Length: 170
Image 1 (cartoon, helix red, strand yellow):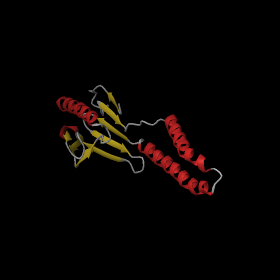
Image 2: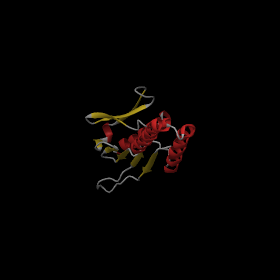
Image 3: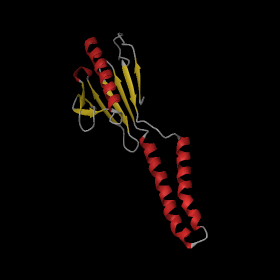
Image 4: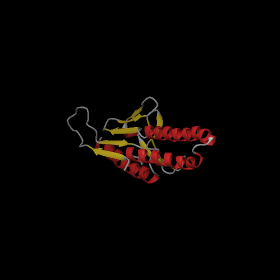
């Protein structure tokens, strides 16, 4: 499951509250480092196989740069996809504040905060199925766009429950 939930106990000491809910979201990573090596190796071997028929001819020198460029492009695109997998969304809910910190792989961090009493978690049918947003404060923010529709629905239910408990505790 591409999210981890940590539930804390409510703090009744009057000091700044400890989080009653912390959720960390991340995109699914299907390619492991070992799988990356195997895939690049297999791709290189499959591209090299047709070259065996032209070994010793001038055609080899014509085809070799194109095959090398193709394998290099596959390598670079897989590395970029891997880097995109480092995206993280950290949601923290306390009785006084709900905050989201989004750590982007190639952009600055983004943050959002609001009073949980005024926050609503909403599911929309567009731009993707079960598109999850939080509405509160000065703007709406999306949450977990990279999750599957079922995971977003599960997250929505979890947030509705946590926000309801926070609102009744106040």
